[in-house]
Length: 186
Image (cartoon, rainbow, N blue to C red; front, top):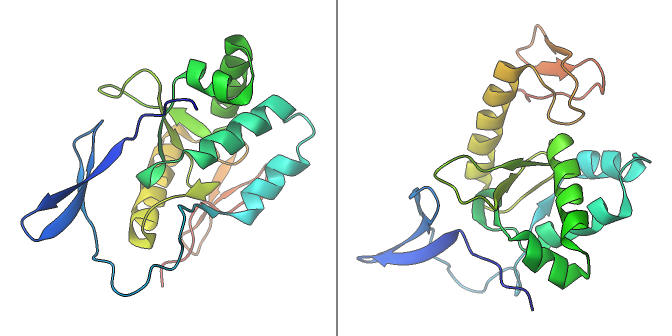
């Protein structure tokens, strides 16, 4: 089994539990589990529109699909991924250049982004438009951060086109793929 580095680690602070990001040092309080757990195994939220868009894209290769599925299986809290290419290649039976090419394809398509310093070289973050692992409140914060960064860069996180427009109701949309980047705050 390939070794995967976990980014988040749970630590007890007095009577409360916190998740500490080993890369950035960020601390997130964890809610106590009451009663039975809903799921007996780790899970990830997938978002159908963007996953369908990838599935319908005929240029999205089989190796990129396999690498993405592997990344989803080792996804850590708040969409962090710390996975060496050699470990991924060993787990998937792929050579290192093929894993690197698939990762470059995922980065180009804005599915994942390379971690910035002080993150390790093999740290990535999955775009929350595709999947998310964490609390719903953190998902909203994460999407807001991604929208701000995307709007500053004027790139659509779904298709990579630079054709964004601002609608009268406060939402940002992409002309190329007709996807809304910001949902109405209720």
